[in-house]
Length: 124
Image (cartoon, rainbow, N blue to C red):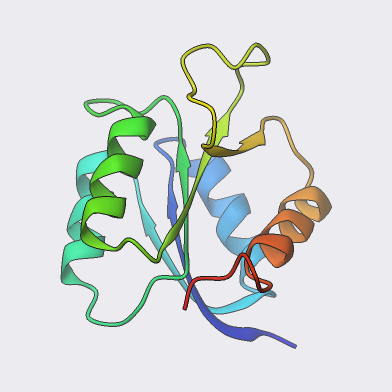
């Protein structure tokens, strides 16, 4: 059963983005998406309702995923923002930033999203 949650997926790789969207449609009623950090910020600004979770790639053209995270949290402090990173060494990712390590399976993605959207972690 899908939750009434809202997730925003930000990834510049169309195939990765499409797979994540398809995987998450079974978990949440609304999946928003963007192909860049700038586009993601525009979606956040224009979406009138809540956004429970943002999944953003670390390496995006034009704007780094950590900058996207920072700006989203400035506007929507209750939104959970997760950085997707293929960097196995954590280079440059500050302590306290929630990450999902790439590559991941669909099952791992769904499990992590469920965990993040379950209280006490869920956005209110």
